[in-house]
Length: 79
Image 1: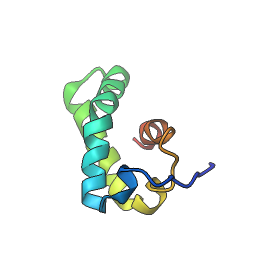
Image 2: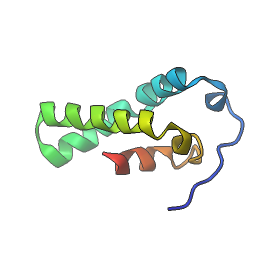
Image 3: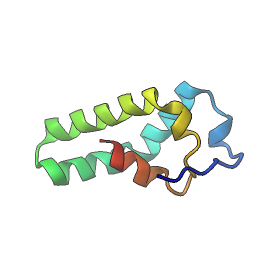
Image 4: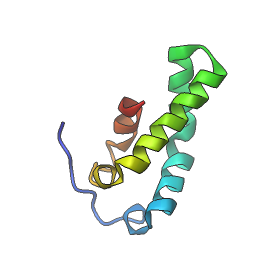
């Protein structure tokens, strides 16, 4: 896996809680749709998104280094 340092942007200036909130607001719906396509079940899709964001919390140091253009793909591969 290749990691890219996130350039200084609005997103990189937030604390971890704010950053997770931004990620959830920006990508949560797309992640849920992807999880639903895979599972065909609302509850399982929601659980998969929750699990993904628990992993985001655990791996915050790595997440902040992923290039902003690749973050959605990275999040989708975490679930």
